[in-house]
Length: 369
Image 1 (cartoon, rainbow, N blue to C red):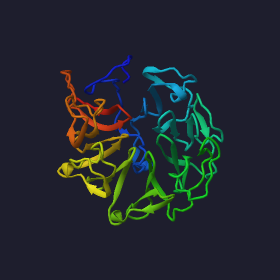
Image 2 (cartoon, rainbow, N blue to C red):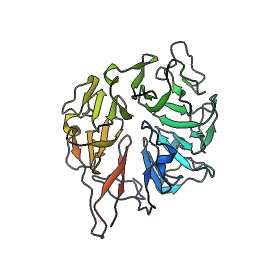
Image 3 (spheres, rainbow, N blue to C red):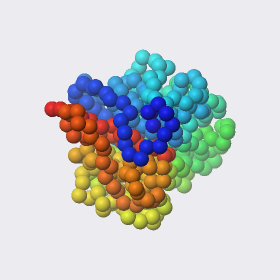
Image 4 (cartoon, rainbow, N blue to C red):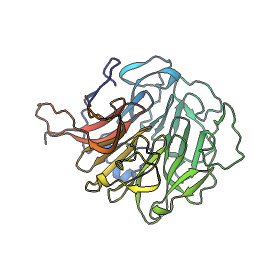
């Protein structure tokens, strides 16, 4: 939780206060279309990411991390837990653009297009713990512009739109006949050659991969059944962000509508039921809102509106939805109310949200102007 002790929180509470310069932007997010350099501005940038039992905050290219340390997932050179946000000094001087957290590993992308990973099949040609961040050297040409990870596999997109995946086979989109290198997975990043067009964004689920194509209206395709396949219902829809959970996915359209599909046994699809959905379906509870940001946890989901309101739904067993008194299964989106201090600052506006296995956190702006 970042509060210095092991605890269970029933509702959101502050972890850190940041003073950032304007204009402020959200750093790159896995599954979200990458902003052009001309749109980033010269002010501050920040974002968050949640893993199995660890969390990350990126502030102006610096990486702050906390949580469980086993497996070396924190990148401090040891496996001890860290209970407060702590600066990781082992990524060099190049600013961090994006971080993706998995189960017992972390992946970071710097502004020079270099990928750093630690622990296990992270593209280091060997399968063992990595206690410090280590550069992933793949067979790609040029820079990496986008990364994503899940519990057991990772993905990277080059500046030319080539997709590389590694980790547990079967969800990598490489086709049949690809045998593991070692430890039951592919630890050397290979290119997904079955994609006929460049890729713009990618999201890794528990047992699948979802990506956005870079051609006209952005399409969406899932890596399932060994090879990437397009989703027909998105052919004429402009998707700006995708998010993948353990067994489900969300997609955000340019009109602010959210669609979900996959396993719904914990209410994570947001359709007021626990039924599965074989095709993407609009979440009716959010149709009157314009959603601008989405994310998935293993068995839960979240969305942020253009007014800065946060909605969450799905598995609430560990109070990770931030609303006390909910049933263990919350199948309909509920608004998360944040506590406001009487400190003279303006109302809270949620900018970003990250969901781990059993916890969640959000990035909130407040201003007296």
